[in-house]
Length: 315
Ligand code: PMV
Image (cartoon, rainbow, N blue to C red; front, side, top):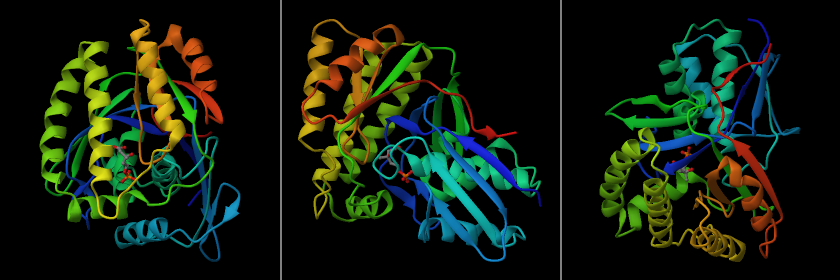
């Protein structure tokens, strides 16, 4: 093998996935549509080692999700113990999709280091086995993930340079999220009376989002994406025990985005399994949107990103 370093960008879903149809194969229960964040990245380096070592953001850790994933890979490929070093230039483990970019980068690094010659679709499959949304971080632009019985199809709907949008991220907490997505999804499926409705609504939203994205219909995306976000959080709130990812600052940001839109700015919000709010807007409005979100009560800082490209190797 040859040591390899790869990078991937996190992605945020406009039509969310929350729930799996097959836990063992990690198949999402619904399709989803996401955008790749070009100005945020995770870099993963791997090399052969006497024993397995995992270093995340400079700290040696025991990462059960990663260990299980490596175990799975070793059922198919003869991999030696590895030294894995992964770091993100944005807050990890707080609903900013660091596990998505992490598994995507690691898949690319391993595929290159061991010359596995995996197709893009095969890389998506391996990344997805680590983290459902990770498959979407292999591609750039607007990325669709469609689950089938035992695998998923991942495809680019719009390239990274085809629609000049920006993503403004309001950081509203410095704490790691309390419930991870896998445990949270299982709890929602097992306890929420809204789960079946969520699945139906998401399939419909996904079809509409594909049409809206292809025709770059911003107004339609506003309704679909904010609807999908609120429906996912309604599902989370109706889970037993409740999954409450928002904090007061998240609600303040929602109000600010809504006010900006009422004032004529083209902007909408989405929020994942964490308290940070992501505002999607026209590139020309990004400064204005970030200035306004920075002033919101409870916002620690603001990041701005363009839509990004695919994962790749660091040469
Ligand atoms: O990639 P996972 O399995 O950790 O799930 C991610 C789930 C959300 O980020 C909340 C929604 C999504 O579709 O990305």
